[in-house]
Image (cartoon, rainbow, N blue to C red):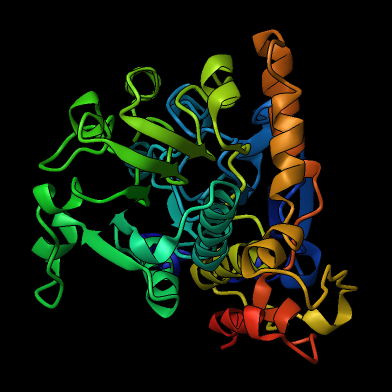
Length: 394
């Protein structure tokens, strides 16, 4: 999953008692997942990375904490001394907020929770897609969806589209180069699609950089809908604004933003759905994120991890359901996308500092949803028009 295993044999029995961890206060259920022998301290990410971070053995973060030469200068950490930072884990799938090369130079192991939120993002995309189609009287069976990036997250989206009988075009040239079993569509075929949904990391170099991948050149091919739940900057927001003016693009849904958390007001106003980087937020995804990064941390330090599993039955699930609901309606009523969208738009017009603070607060403090698998299995009688809910059973 990462480089954490490289140094795992360098640890001593010191870590079996007295180990100190510093963690983002919003990380999910750490107290239930960490070994009892460790000491857990929390920090508020709104105040930035504490100066005392290097006094801890391990640091657990989210995307809101950047790790770089500025936030973690080389002078602040001595290598492999008890009580000095040796491990950083981000309980997120993405890791462009972490300078991994810098950590290598410092001798600090790094881990992430790859694929932890793939299903949650897949459900968000399907929910938003069907909401858009129902609101605009569009028959999705007649549309073709281009999926850009076919890894963990893109794979979930593709799986749901296929189960729902919606045509998809798979575009991922790097995956084709690394996996002989995968064949990517060509760019021309992708640009003939009606809808594009992005599931790539944000990269600036190499053979296939993704920064402003969705450019004015792409957008002039005309699309009914653009969805970006990947990273801000994969879609060129200026080009998207211009494409809307020229009617090359009819609608767009954005969960990520180029200058996040300071999003641009105008592009937010015109979005069909606008949310604050929460597509991957669900109780299960947050549990998996914490579980995966803690597992890597315990492996690194030679600790025995807590093996407790996610207990959905212990959580009170409120289900909005009646037999007259459409598939699109059920999905929309059983997520909190509407809440995020409504409250993000309330931030339009605020000054940058206040906007950034409230954007982060909306992300961190909104109650996360339960994934559809747990919701659906609690419904006894499903009407014919809701038969499609079976795609979430597994």
